[in-house]
Length: 214
Image (cartoon, rainbow, N blue to C red):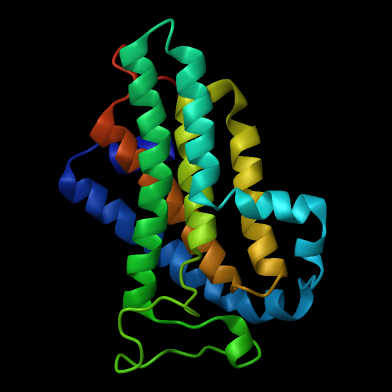
């Protein structure tokens, strides 16, 4: 059975169960590999390279706002209402990915890898309780990138692997720059995918069918 159908195709209890399993799998298990990736996957010059900068902006929500505007302008003459729904879907999915990431950072409060040279450090609640600056779990860039990729995979399913490859590239640069642990980007990727699907179910931007699996 398709994973998305298993998670999102049932009722609230079924969705909650599978999402909990997913968070445990993609949040806790990757922590076993955090030290390995910190020690062996470092590229301090990744953002000095053109492709590295390109990958990073995949996790910047305004990138997808611009893409949504272009999509709306292109599709509006054929079906104005559907064009608006599709454009808003991409915008809301990317923004929701970033918002959920920031909320989770405030709750989980794990700091970036460079604070203790690859060991875990958690910020006290008494220290900047409403600021996410320096917090890392999950990666907000990765969540935005995967939420947008999931949205685009629903809107343009024949090119879905292009969108997911760009999102994975964004996650890799966050890992290689040591801005995040491996578990930060893995959890961010899973939750970004969930956000993209959740916004789809809430908005239903395609009124004539569900499209293909993403």
